[in-house]
Image (cartoon, rainbow, N blue to C red; front, side):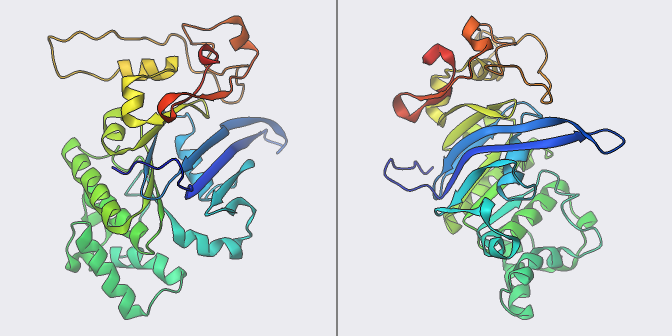
Length: 327
């Protein structure tokens, strides 16, 4: 796997990203906000895979969708090759959609059931004005072959495919405009384990061929460990730890990361592992705790954790953590 160099310029820089959804009463008056993403900051380098993990509802998918402006950000910046894509108007942003694509979590609902899969794969090229009709058809068939399907399946409808095959179609569609960044939103979570490994291996093969960067969103730590160069751990809309994959698994610093890693089962009945149990419920994103958002469940919480938001500190091996234990 590619390891980004210290002097390499990031392909994508996300800084202080926030996405809040308004809560309205029956009269349409805003009564509160769901703070789905709070001050998320990370860099993504060329040909790198950055994994993003955390509990369901922590804001992983919203982060990916907001970067692509499928939902508009509340605040923050996203610099792609040095240009803030959040400030671009729709017409100005259109060329950047060619550079960044997404593979959605549900391969069934992300495909139009009334359209043949050939149409779905060709559609991004048509929108971007790439090639003639014959050229688009030829490229679509070639992409289907690359993702392990047959050219003659171009004429079939989504319901005629299995879940794993539909996910391959979604991947072919994302590759149609030859993007530099692909956001994979839990692309294997709905698939059987045997199919998961096939899709993961396919993603890695295509990354080597097309030299793309992946933001890989998932909650399965074993999958993320296999594919990622670096991993960011999210909790309640914030990244609490970010480190190279091997470093994170060898030396987890944040109490939440330590608890997550302790939950990974070991395929050895003779080897005992200490399980760190997080007590209490996840706070509501409509009413986040003051200070560190994890302090209500943290076994190491101090008095300052209740009032002070921890800053991100960088240690050895490019290991970042937001926790008062390491100030």
